[in-house]
Image (spheres, rainbow, N blue to C red):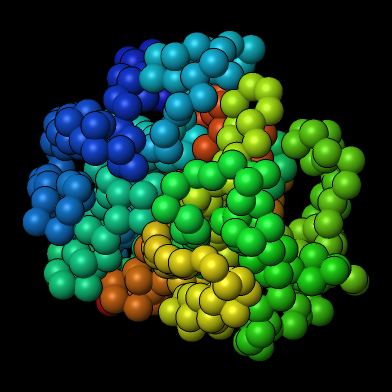
Amino acid sequence: MNKYRQLYQQHKNDLFQKFLTLLKFPSVSADPAYYGQLNACADWLCNYMKDLGATVEQIKNYGLPVVLANFSVDPKLPTVLIYGHYDVQPANDRDLWFQDPFEPLIRDGKIYGRGVADDKGPIMMGLFAISILKNLGQLPLNIKIILEGEEESSGEAIFKLVEREPEKLKCDLVLCTDTGGLRSGRATIVYSTRGLVYKQIDLIGPSHDLHSGTYGGPVQPPTNALALILAGLFDAEGRINIPGVYDKVRAIDPDERKAFADLNFDYERYKNHIGTDTLITEPGLTPLEQNWCRPNLCVNGIIGGYTGQGPKTVLPSTASAKISMRLVPDQDPQEISGLIDQRIRQLCPPGIRLEIKDFGQAEPFLGLRSGPAVEAATEAITCVYECGPDLIREGGTIPILSHFARYTHPNVLCLGFTGAECNTHGPNENLSLDAFDKGVETMCLFLELLAGRIERS
């Protein structure tokens, strides 16, 4: 048993109680009704990091609180900036949970609760590692922690802070642990994430709902118009039917295709996990290539007409849809947003008033695949997991990564200790206790190794 694991096991019960406390905060950023709890969560994190010896401040002048902590050891040593977010997704589907999503449950070797994997678990892995390293002596390098409270709601606070106050974030490497894993029992190094454009389409027809027999025919139902628009965004093969969308999409490099194939990903297990018997890809692509290297358009929600029990022959006066597009490196969110709007307007039929709302954009990210930080992470992961990391892209979006690379430091490393089975954003979000323990141990060893691998800028 190594020194990190031994000390962690000695203090695990006390440390884990802190994790459970953090999970109990319903820090939902998408709903202002939860802002009080979100602020309380930020306060708790500040107090905990102060107890660990950090100087801490909350930055509130850009939006919801950004928590910034500084564990300063020696200005001659390199500095790593660790990013995370303490806000969580809503949990309105409570009937589908084993328990109240903000009352964490330990069951069958897993801990269940909203935010346990995204992103409170990874936050606490890093903070527990700091606690252990300090107990063993002193930190091997300077560590800054930045935690935002708007990641799940496309907020702008952290972006403004990164742009306007870069001196507070000066570092020699940015580390993000808000990334997922690919396979159970394996850690990952994620070097690319997709970007995002999110919109709402609102269609307005007659001034009020009408009888579908008396008025049907001459009057265009907004629900019919919405169906035409959404269908027109795709071609017969399911590709995105928006002119110009694919113009800047890179071909997949042969070495990446080989690396993806060498992962030997179990697609049958993947299908069983999500409950489907069919995976859709463009010709010649594997599902991983489709998810990681190609843009994707998803209809996230449709609103309109009568949805109650039994029939009601109504011609609705309004209809809406929420859509999002994931972007790959070289695609520009503003350009793609304009192309989407142009296509929707082309498809909207007469007799309908169209409104398009923007709900946020994020750039795709392409980061480190090699170098000293990757080598240190690989060595740490291999030591703890007894196998090397999966070096992967990810289909999801972490909006701040490209901003860090542009304004803070060009070297941004992403480590993932959670997996697809964690069901992030869904009911019964969970994290295996073994994955959590290994994440803590890996962070300890990685920070030790990193101190001797990267140079102070």
